[in-house]
Image (cartoon, rainbow, N blue to C red; front, side, top):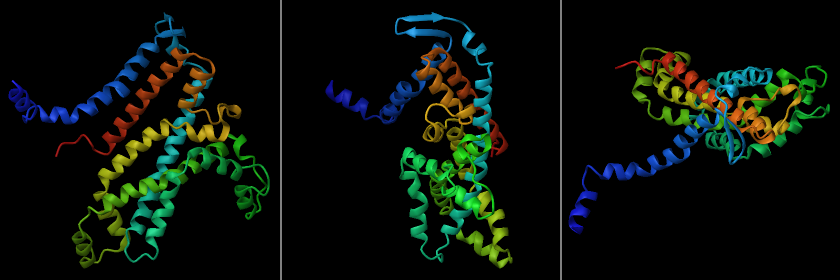
Length: 297
């Protein structure tokens, strides 16, 4: 009996399931169960653990308000701007850092990755002072070189957005460089040697060899950037904590936090979360379709 059980566990049919069992359990507990619970809660009015009322689509109808529209606009703008910077900039820097003739390239690699290891709250405190209103604050000092008056960065709609994008780019440029550097190691050097023989210059090799060869990495970085952009909360919280002037830093996740934990309206917060999930999935499916991810062959 013991031998039969031992043979069953060690059979090629069972062993693969044993290896993937931790992932399946983790997925069910920490991903599928919370999603199903959030969907159920989005149709409820929750006043306490045992005080739950089914309200149908009321929470979804309540989404038609100026705060939600503003959160949508802020999240879409922030995601678009961060992707527009965090794809081409790290790609170019990775190509430069991949050059073995670049002096001190290991130092540059470490320096660019260092912000990713820094707490967003610590980084946020630095940038909050850097975007201060004093003429001696870092960014006011920089624009002063061009003869511009000191700005109130964290009080305006677009300057506040700029502050959030700068903090995001500072944190994640190094991480995306690592992804692109890993992809660059897989490009055969023979392709560049053939291009040299054909007389191609650096730009032609970049656009006709490097970028097409890195397409899978670009798709991956874009996918996680879409998720990261729409799920942004820490940057906004680091600047304005739970409430920003005129809701200039109110993202969808910040709206969930504000509704759920400040107003204890968990049903409405769940409805916002479900729409956020639908938006992220839709945007990612569109960008994967544009990149030709679903094409066969």
